[in-house]
Image 1 (cartoon, rainbow, N blue to C red):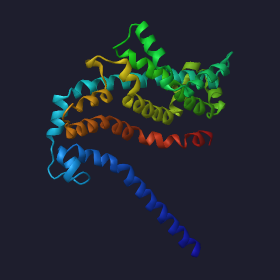
Image 2 (image 1 turned 60 degrees about the horizontal axis):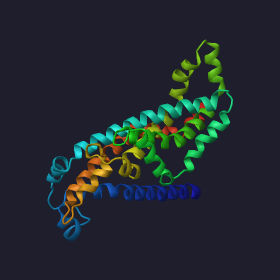
Image 3 (image 1 turned 135 degrees about the horizontal axis):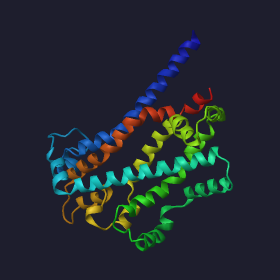
Length: 280
């Protein structure tokens, strides 16, 4: 009986801690929404942390119509989607080849891919800018998409490599006995098994490319090609700033990432148990 009471007390403490952690995690998002519905006086003086005294939806109208947010938003969507498709496609094919196929120098190729994780972006910014200029892709979508794909390949390939290594070889042997080609095995058997890893990497790559600033501010100078992180710089004026409209723009910029996570959250949770489920 005493053990049962201790267990209930322990579960209650864990539940309280998790609720506290959830509230602390959600509060910045709630504060940003409140921030976007206030004027400058409420934000800095009269009501910085509370619920808005007057819901100023005109901040969203101003952000959308006066500060070119639709163009920045569309550019971010194009760059992020292209980066996700390119990085996931290339990394999943490489990882399958490195984890399941026998070919010369596959260990060296896998090590070379892993090294990319240890190279800071700041170290290669000047050579990257020179390459973008020499390949005549400066101020194009390719100036962002190609480097974004390259910088996401290393980590994504390592994750997929680990998942492929955890899949029993018997599944591929059975498919081979049934007459399936390597391509049929890859698309019909292996990809469905690692679906949780695919969803996790879609979220990871999307967030990286959506929020990236350092490369974008150096490689893109054309106004019509700037992404949302760059566009937010223009909300701050020389003498005055419409902070409410800036908060509205930040809220708009956060919506796609929240929606992406909501769509793939179940798959992300499954990624924690997919290895044991497959082996079982």
